Length: 147
Image 1 (cartoon, rainbow, N blue to C red):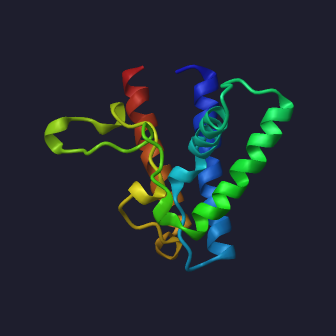
Image 2 (image 1 turned 120 degrees about the vertical axis):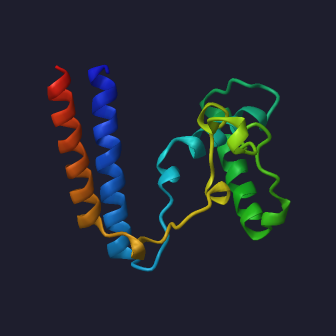
């Protein structure tokens, strides 16, 4: 594994841990979607910027114009979520056990696609840390036997 990838994984793990901890402090009964830590929102936004006008590539003035227009659209869609049909290409496909691994078929997952417990009240960070530590210690001992 390249050092850059290893470092990215370490930083992502630390970021997720701290984001859950901050959510537990700020909103103990709140929800936390780990999948929201990615860049999907930014990708969707720039996709909208590219389609807001007739020119796919924008200069600074066009970016400002498209961004302010899209901000108004976001406010309108927040008031009327039934009008938002979402993006055509960034949807989670149907997954079945027979279909195989869905990670090769899905790139963008939004909170509305996610099923599962996302309540931070049910997360014990100390237990997560200890279980992760135990798993890493086991993996290191297995790797030492191989190397």
